Length: 305
Image 1 (spheres, rainbow, N blue to C red):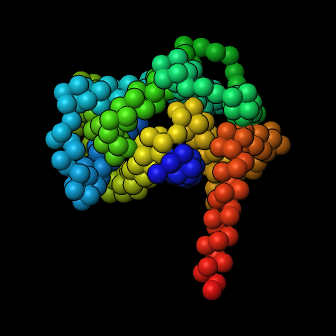
Image 2: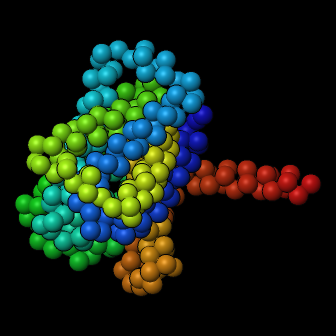
Image 3: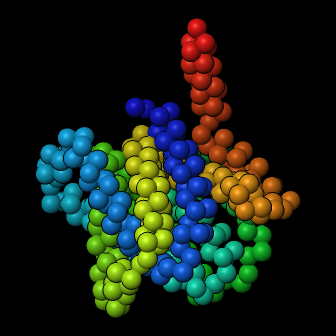
């Protein structure tokens, strides 16, 4: 695999993210968000462990050093638990508009941390694409209100997720995406379950009904694909590129909302989508899309013969 494959996996992750965000609007209704998130993490950790077994890669888990296990635990803490707790707590105290925009700044922090710790270099063209993404997201969340304590918590969560991207990229130097994804979800779920136990919420898991459990399973399957695609692709592309391309998920969510829920798209939304798509195209490189187009054309031409 190379950079092109990594970009393809990052875009696939954005597609999964867009679908997942749309479905989560229905899934999380009436369910404790902390319980919902913790249980999803548990299921995904089990799915990933099963994949590792089926692919005969369990030996790679056994070969991990204490240092590497510690790094995976840190990934689970920094990316798979604490920011989720901060985000969901703050979401009850601030507007969805504020939360949405601040969470979308994740790629900015990933770029900053990657430049500082991994010495990743970014061209002026890349930075122009990143600026378009930021402006596009601001257009989507143009009704941003005053900045308060809850908003600061969401910003901290976004910063932690950006830092986790850099930490995961470092761990990926010595292992592969499935192992890092498993570490994030396994340790993340342990930290989340510990939080639920400490706050007396863990008993709510047993109170979930069939419909709620069904939604947990459906969204867990999407989260499984998300982490599998993302951490596999992250090994082959720069952190800033992978994190920035996730912004493509927002237009996909909006399209699904329009088609299935009849949610109208405002002029500001449309402008935001266009800027995000162009920004992502600049970051991925127009040559990438030309290459994909040629490959697709060759595939269909061969198939027709």
